[in-house]
Every structure is written in structure tokens, then in C-alpha cells.
Image 1: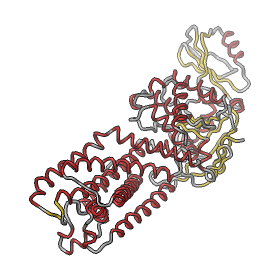
Image 2: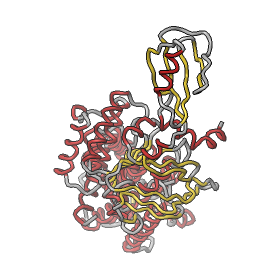
Image 3: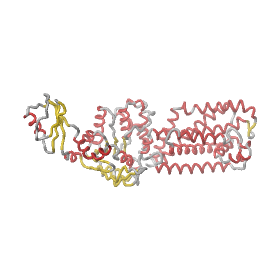
Image 4: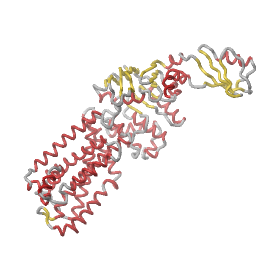
Length: 262
Length: 308
């Protein structure tokens, strides 16, 4: 396939993926908006007023970057894992495997689909946030880079999960038992400086903490990272490192036919 | 040029099951070729390897002289595959399924739309283009699969039991359609359990059994090898006893039906003459099974007995 044909093929996968999550918007786009609205009402407006300041900001203001990131992470991941596993389950993945499509295009197509959903949901959540707080962004380029790269990373994670999954249970185990706790303990709702030293050290082993704080830094101009002696670049470097690592693993598994060929 | 060339193809599944034991197969360009075999013989594994759904253990596969390992992309561009089972997202619209398939081959939106429209019209599913695929009947879904496989105008089309479970009307219309595209230059490889289908459509045939090609020849040549043929005769008047005939074997199935087995070289004239000579009047006659079916059973009999 030449470059033009590859581009057209990639556009087809992306179109199909976007069309898929748009077609089921009641399941994909509305629930995150409702959930975030409830977070704002309960934690922001009702409880937040009693909490006062967090990390030097109003509690609602502190929470917004974390909530946006949480939505981007979980939606990017779930879009790819459910879509790719669904294709495996219904055997419609065969449609792609019999074509001349190189594996990297299949991976790229799904990752872009995950990013597209992550960004759409992120935009919806941001829009909802604006009802509750007048938000401004401190560093736009950094904000865009962090949100896109994190979305790419979790789309790749979803793809990996889908390659290994053999049943619908397998696609919910990692989001429920690993990702969800890491997101909630990654500083969405609190500054880790509130934690005792021991738990602060443990929290530093949570990669999602760096992503949420990098995003918070890009919006608010401040986060836990600098306070704990980490540069924002270390967080960005870590995201890029995991993107490269996950991409290599995904491609290697695709070439081996893991989960898609007998 | 060969439409398909397979050399020493082997496949061993995890657990040591040898699905293919080093098969060789050549299909000429423009051929309509039958690949037959009992269940589990290795047909679908062979097709799976050609279409990249199964990883081969060793061997070489060339599509129109292009090695699938050396130039995977170019080789696959020449190929269209109709799988045994429905393999598209049934929640999508028929038109989208077929258009997207063209897109995966790198065709632009306009060209994809044009090709999809052409094949949907050809296969009589144009009216269904805006319907969700899950709402279609089994036969209609088969047509969608055929349209999907043809949407990139492949030079080699492989059909894995395309008419399994479809009604006679659709089967016959598919036969006509496949004959037409074969006449227009598309090489076709067909696997089927309906041997009359293979006998009617295909010029050459390979029979695979237990992962080995046990026969690979022209349909005509194979049929001339038939050692004996069995016919059913319906009688105008009932009889109670098997007539005493030495020229050929006769079995009384019921008072109004006899079964006659003829050896190679024995003509039907002998039967008619002998039966009318002893006063038996025939009202109708037919083959007990297809001629190919008899040969097929002969060739794969050991495997079938083993399975029983």
C-alpha cells in the first residue's frame, strides 16, 4: 500500500471508530457528563465549600483538571478495549486481517479512535466544569500535549488489554481493579501533600499521579509535582516512555498474532 | 501465471495437532477450483493461512506469483475472501460495512461508494443498504459477505462454504453470479459440502483429507474414474420380489422402487432393455447420489470410518 492508500485506510478505521461511539452516544458521551456533574454538585458545591482551599486553590478549581483527566483516561481506554475486543468477539476483526493493512495502521486507527473519544468526552466535561467555575488555562501547549499524550497512552493500554482478553470479564478486570483505584488515588480529589510521608512515597509509584498533576500544572500553573521536587518534564518523559513501550509491545503482539490469529 | 501456489504448507496447532502436513497446491489463473474434504480435513486452515487469519508453521504461499511473506500488502490486494461464518459488525448498516471494507484496501470514499453500490446492486441487496445487518436473513448476510469480498475487485476470490444453510433460490443465483465473475477473469477457489455445487461450477478439484491432498486433478478426469454408479428407478407397477438379473446388481427398496448399481462401461441401455424384457416398466429414474459424491466418499472413506 502506498502512502495515499494507507492514509485512506487509516481514515476509514478512524471514521468507523468515531461513528461507532457517536452512534451509541447515550452510552458513551452522556454518562461521563452526568457523572462529572454529580461530582461537581456533591464534592464541589456541597462538600467543597467546607473543605475550602486545596493546594492553594478553591477546591472546585483544584478538582477540575483531575476530573477532566479522569474522564479522558477512562474513556480512551474503554473505547479501545471494548471496540477491539468487540471486533474479536464478533470475528469482524477478520475484515481487517484479510486486507493489505499493515499492523501499525490497525493499531494507529484504534488509538486515534480512543483519542477521539477521550477528547470529545474531555471537551464535554470541560464544558460542564465551566458551569461551576470560570476556568482559565495557564499553559495551552502543555495542556494540549498532556491531554493528547495521556489519551494515546491509555488507548494503547486498552488495545493491549483487548489483545489478551478472551471474555467480556477480561475487559473489565483491569479498569475496575487497577485503573480505577490508581485514578482515584492519583490526586484527582486531593493533594498528595495531605498524605503522611509513607503514603506520599507509595503514591509516587502511581504513574497516573504524574499525568494528573502535569495536566493540573498546565491549567493552574502549579501542582504537587514541584512541591515534591519533580520537574514537569519528568512527568512528560514518563508519558512518552510508556507510549513508546506500549506501542512496541502492541506491534510485537500484533505481528505474533496474539489474540487475533490461531 | 498461477492464481495460487502453495508449497509444502504445514500447520501444527498448539497441542501438537497437525492440521496440514505439507500440502502442495496450484490453481491456474482464471480457474474455478474446488477444494473439498470432510470436516476437519484442513480446508479452512488452508484458507485461513492464505488470508492471514491463521499463522502457518512452515511453507510458502503465493497469490498471483506474489509471496505473501515477501510482499504481504501487494499479495493481499489481489485477494477477496468469503469466510464460513458471518464476520462483520451486525450493528452496522449494510452499506457502511461494504464501503468500509473497500476503505481498508485504500480505496477513496468515492471509489468505495461506487464499488459498494455496484456489488450491492449485483447481489440484490441495494434496497437493504440502510438497514442494520443484524436485521437481515441468513441468505442476505451471505450476500453481504460476498459483496464485501468483491468490493476491492480481487483477482482471486476464495469462498469457504458460501452457500451453507442458504435456500435453493439464493444458492442458484449465487452460482450464476460466481460463474459470471469467473467468466470475467476472477479466479475462484470454492470449498463446499454440496458436491453437486462443485461438480456444476468447478473445472479443477483438490480433495484434502487429514491435512494431505489426496487428489488434485480436473473435474472431468476425476469423474471418469468412477468405478460404479448407482441409479434409483421408480416403477410404474409394484413388484414383490427382486428380479433375477445377472448383468447388474439390483436391490428392491420398496415395491415401487429399485436400486441398480452399474459398473464402469455398463450403459443404461442394458438396464432398460433387461427390465423391459422381464416386464418391468419404469416411470422415472435418477442418480442415487451425485457422481462426485460417490468418488469423494471413496477417497475419504477411511477418515469418515475413523470418525464413526
